[in-house]
Image 1: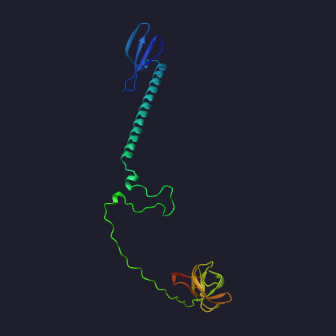
Image 2 (image 1 turned 60 degrees about the vertical axis):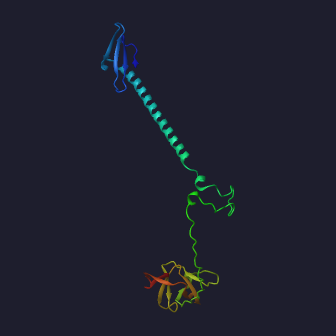
Image 3 (image 1 turned 180 degrees about the vertical axis):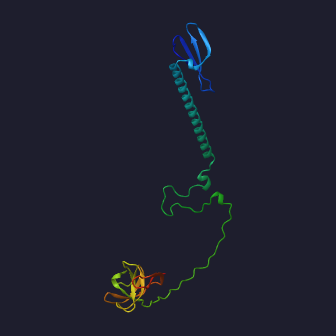
Length: 234
């Protein structure tokens, strides 16, 4: 309830029920000692009404904050209770998998490890059947196949894999390296992509007679300069 200061010999009373936001006003005339049961809010001075509304608004905000805090506390208590119950009901890792088989502080291979333990939920299963495998077949060494000469390539466009240059591979700043039939002025018979390994057979100046070190296959790409297919390793 709100009780105002005397205003022109009149004291105003304001109250509000829980189901309504409107204020019920009453007044008391000091000189006549008359008390009106209910009066119209518009007859109350504006400054008195403003003070009453501010007072009731603060009370309403406090009540709402208290209700929010109460429900938040109830929710937190419920969550904590549910978590504690879940922890109490859930089995521990030791109950599921048994005691630890590794010595604490041991991280070396074969130190304290034991693989004979069977978890409780697997003990009722029958042991797996013993499977016998045939011995692995002995691989006979395959004879080294000699490749036929492929043609002549320009040596500076290749790189050797060792100091003796027993093997080389194509390394050219283009799509492929042209292969000529019988020497520098002979026609181009093919083109090799970068990275194709080669076996050098003979050298004349900067030109090298080579044989492929892998099985070649065409890429269905035609050399623009020579019109021959570009080949790569299978």
